[in-house]
Length: 542
Image 1 (tube, rainbow, N blue to C red):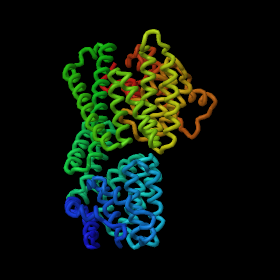
Image 2: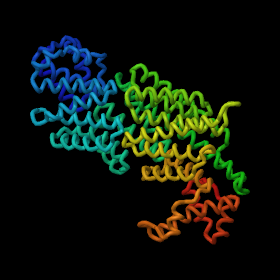
Image 3: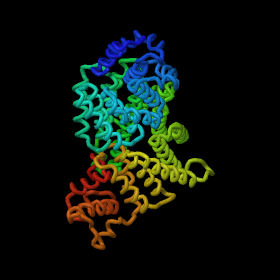
Image 4: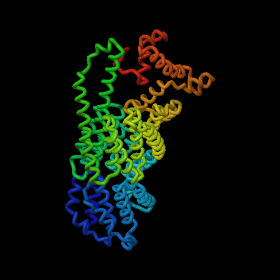
């Protein structure tokens, strides 16, 4: 029989984040939980307590689901309200594990509706914490932030310092998703300061993972690797955290791929510099062979990380995680020109997302399928095949990706979908730079401060393709009619310079000095504008 004293002790360990101690206690009384009789007076409380420990990494081996299944309608009718609410919390946690967020939210909403009737307000804070995570999983970031802040406020009022710190790890990440990196960093630092002496390896690993994703988005890939490695170390400290480990392996693989792409872009920029500049031919960088080996090493490591991650996810039947691994694997295959492999991985990712109505995963997969279609069209793969079919596939997938992204509140996903659609519209088959520019403008509205990483590079690539297609800029038409909106003359001049200088640069054989003489401006200003538009590498001077 599970006593109230035991449950109180487990509750205290949980609130103080004495995770190892609590898990040792649980391991010692596993048989008692397994023999739990649903008719016992505190049976619901026992199951709810176990659910909270499963949430922090206790490996129950399916015990929780087994116990929930023993509560038939008769047993449920005889439970007190407090015990019944705990049972519903356990059902919510089981639904979350099964990636059924709609079912989890149904149970959590019931628990939260009972707030005024319950003495245990800590349970309400935990219910809001779990609810916010469900919204985050669905890409509903505004709703997630509203709920997590409510949970944090309650945790503060109750004086549950460590629980509040755990809640702030999620709040910090959501703040970052909302384009508030300073506030996000403050929240994560506060949480880390409170939890660093605890053994809550999930929270500590999540903090490092959040730092890694923030660094990755800022284009600081080496720093991102360090944080992801730290998160992996935390998740490897305890069995039962394999799902978190797999997520960090996926994140670090993505960072390694992006770092490899950065190396390749720098090498391409240097090659371009040597082709167009006498000074560039005298540039000595790190030996090409060493950088090539570093690039290939990173890609090999990324593939190995993804292989470990997918093994974990597939073993746990985690659709979202398995799909994300396949998306990242597909990008590497696409980078290497393996279109068939990339297409197959993207298709598998979409099917995994579709089984759970996972709009984020489905959108990512369709974006990838569009990119593969564009690449196939541009390469004219397959003798005798109708290459227009690839262009049409790319168009259909990109269009669907935009619609799928609208089901979420992920600004980056929306931006990426519009960029993908723009790249498709400006390709050699559709050749519609006007519509591509509309996509560009929509993407820019979502990017805000995200102007450092690979997504911004994609944005600049689309912008360059549109500029080279020679489409009349809508701003020129508006200015000719005296329509400037709320812009100042200085702002109009800056935009005009960004339109004019790239055109003159192309006409003057990409010579900065010629552009400077032609327009009577300083070469420094020409270079600054070209670099801002992504048309000139940092090391390029011609």
